[in-house]
Image 1: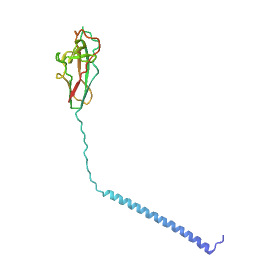
Image 2 (image 1 turned 60 degrees about the horizontal axis):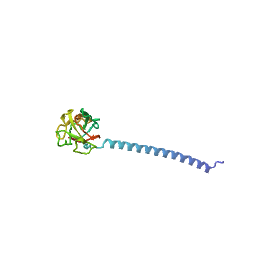
Image 3 (image 1 turned 135 degrees about the vertical axis):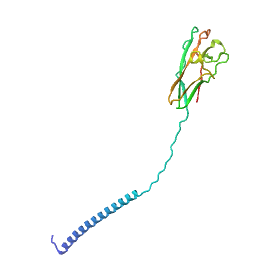
Image 4 (image 1 turned 30 degrees about the vertical axis):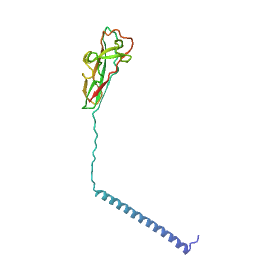
Length: 196
């Protein structure tokens, strides 16, 4: 290609423009860097000079008094033989919150017409005045036939520990000498209550 004055001038002009673009880009980059640095310094100063105020809030809860109880299972005397006492036991378990004392007592009243603490177990669970249809049982706090448990008499109590624990044993006895009973299963539901 032949280089003329016009071509030569064009090339020089193009080179000059490229150099100027690089200078402008370099200056722009430097200016942007300075602006970013200034902004960061300003933000740091703002943070350093920030004023803070603290506040509080109250958190609370409470533990209320509570007690539950259970017995270790059904009290089973097995087959009754009139010539000997039939004995059986169950354990009373209680669970009360720490600092709470629970008192477990009989809520079922003993049967009228007998001695205090005598409970009748009825054949088939049906109440009957016929002596052939019931057997008399007693429930002791410390031993068979001793410190009898019934509504208004004796109880189990213990201070709560926050976990279940045994607080006593109920000693049941169907006394010997109860003859002429009909064949069948004799039962009675006894209700207990815990007061705290």
